[in-house]
Structure formats: structure tokens, C-alpha cells
View 1: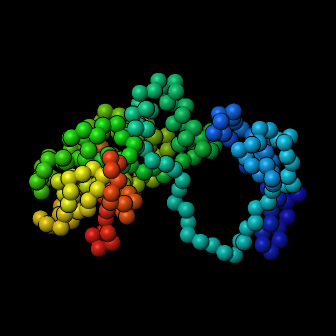
View 2: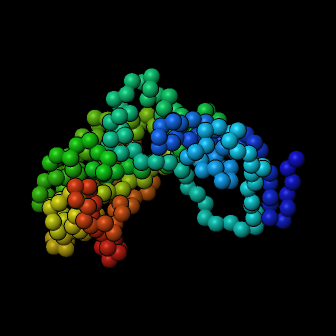
Length: 251
């Protein structure tokens, strides 16, 4: 029977927590295991193959009901170019149940992911890194952003995103750039540099990000959160998209 102590110690129902395990030797591939097989003391989860290998007492969750922290907005993942491409290319018999399982609420058989990060241009998981496909304005010196366009995302990103939003209408969206357009940077490299301090480039880049959000809004896609840079402390990443963005530039 459940009981409450001053710390709020509640026995955890056996069916409340489940575990799925994949081992590096591929002996187990996303196999559901009893929680005891994963939490067993002295038996690493990478070695557990079934519940009979070890037994543990009932697991407990300790709650201090009087201490509260910030609210959690949601749980989710990133919808990158590569993941959107794969989902769009997959047969509907595969993609439809997968999207439902990921984004539908628990009451409808999903796991309830409700927070999604989008990439502003390329990321380290994109499909096309050729010139003209890196950012939404790859035209050097286009300070008025006259060549801005995200029409290329109509190929597979927007169709998949709209399917996700139809499944979970409460989805929160966050947008993050991995790099500014190369012509805005101190070095025209996909994997390095920072914003050029000439031509009031910070203002140009700010208008670029606003244009991105406005372009999505016209398609009925509202961005809830915008971060200025993915991993802003990384400015030398070789062939991986990145850009150094220091606090002064961010402010």
C-alpha cells in the first residue's frame, strides 16, 4: 500500500516505470526488460539479458513536496534536415506509426514528446552542404537580405513538421542556427569564425533571424523560442557547421 512520510516517500508501482535496452554488441536491440534487470546492483545494464540475472527490492522515488524548482516546459528532440528527409522518404506505413508513437499524448498511445528544435540552416545532421543550401541567404553581400528564401525546406522539412504539429497541437518549437551565412563571418568557412564586426553585421544577422521566424509564421508555423547559436563556444569545427558567438555579440 502507498504511504506518505514527511519526505514524501512513495513506493513505486511495478508497472509505472519500464526500461528498453540496446547493447553495443547488438545482442539486445531495443528490448523491453523488467526494471529490476536494469537497476540490479552489481549487474551492469549492459550485461543484463533478463530479469532472472538479478533481483532488487522495490524501487522508491523520494519526493520533497515542500521544495519546488522551475517548471519543465517539455521534453523532445531535434527535427534536423537528415531526420526529416528519412521520415519523408519512408513509407507511410513506417512514418505514420513512428510519428504517432513519438508525438501523440500518452492517452493516445504515444510517448508525448512536446518540444521540438529546428535548425536555422544546416546543422551537423543535414542532407545538402553545397553552396546555396547552407543557410537561407548564401548570396555574399546581401545586406538587405533580398535573396533570403527557405523554399528549399518545402521538399521534406515542412511536410514532416506539419505532420508532427497535426499530431500534437501543443508542440513547442525552438529554432537554433549552427552558423550564420558564411559571408557574414570573419572567415568564410562552414566550421569556424564568428560574426564580422564590419557593416554592422550583428544588425544584419538579427534581421536574418527575424526574417526566418516571419517566413515560418507565414506558413502557419510559430516559433516559441529562439536561441542565437548552437554551442556558441565552438569556433573551430572543421567540416561541421559551427560559429563562435561571444556574450557581447549575443547581447
